[in-house]
Length: 120
Picture 1 (cartoon, helix red, strand yellow):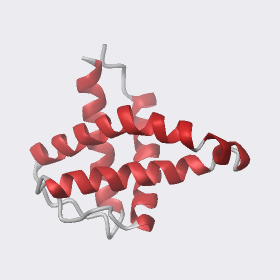
Picture 2 (cartoon, rainbow, N blue to C red):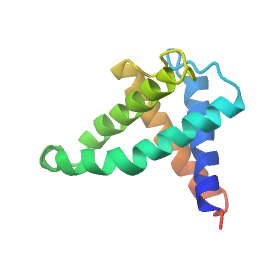
Picture 3 (cartoon, helix red, strand yellow):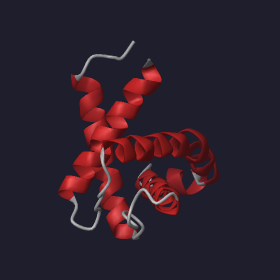
Picture 4 (cartoon, helix red, strand yellow):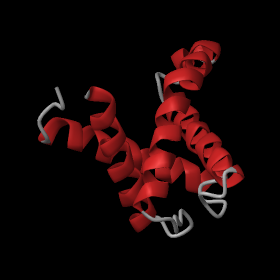
């Protein structure tokens, strides 16, 4: 049940980011949004830990601020995979757009996790 809950939170966060950021356009329906949220979850589950480990020295030097760059790259990877599956129209493939989207997604996901009850 927790996986479904995280999928819903990721989908909501991506939807809010698409609504707030002008170059982060997502034109799909709710099924496409759920698939993109699942891709985002898989990217964060498998690729992000490796990226954080490999960039640990620079993350320590920047006092954790490099995590925002890692999050932007996770959005860019998600956008590239979604685009290759014809689920998006190149949304989030520019670094600045992905960086802003990563910040919005992180904030919305954190707020929703705090406000809404746990999915267990």
